[in-house]
Length: 228
Image 1 (cartoon, rainbow, N blue to C red):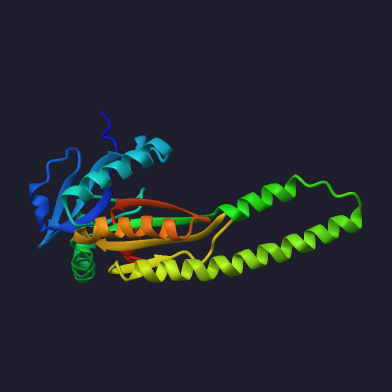
Image 2: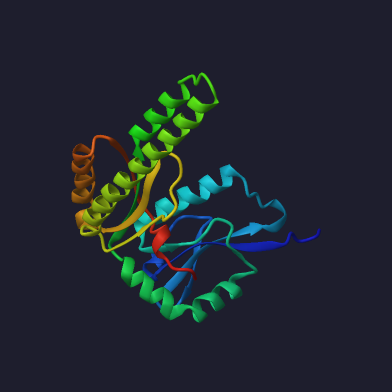
């Protein structure tokens, strides 16, 4: 009987405490005082669909509750355990440094939506222009109104981001926003400050009722692991 070709799926890089992990079929490949959490999978049965991605994310969330971890992208595969061990050896000092940076911290994501922009867009779409001149004038006024809203929103979200930065160890923000989303950012928050951080977001929502805040987390630190 022909043996099925196998691959090693990489979930996360963690500290030495992974020795106590009991999450079969996941298991640790250890090098010194760090480890890679992996799963051996059949190459011919790999699935890159939504269901598989969700299951991968759920496994990372469970791991995140137990360990300090550097999460890997869905679909990170290596040839075998020897390749995993080589990876740990080559990037050992980088992984050690990043694990220390994120120890005792969790990631929160924040999106801010402009309700006024959506309402104005819907209202303008409902207007009927009688002729070409009126149509062009309306488009001009719409443009000016949109530009002013964007200018005000930029100043507002800069203030919000600055306030939340004070409560986080690290932060990143998306420089590109689309549609009604006027801000998208992620914050690495110490465990002891999580409740206060969430409370601060609620306070800011009350200060800026014209905006809608969508806070998610805590998550594994997806946005703070570096390019490696």
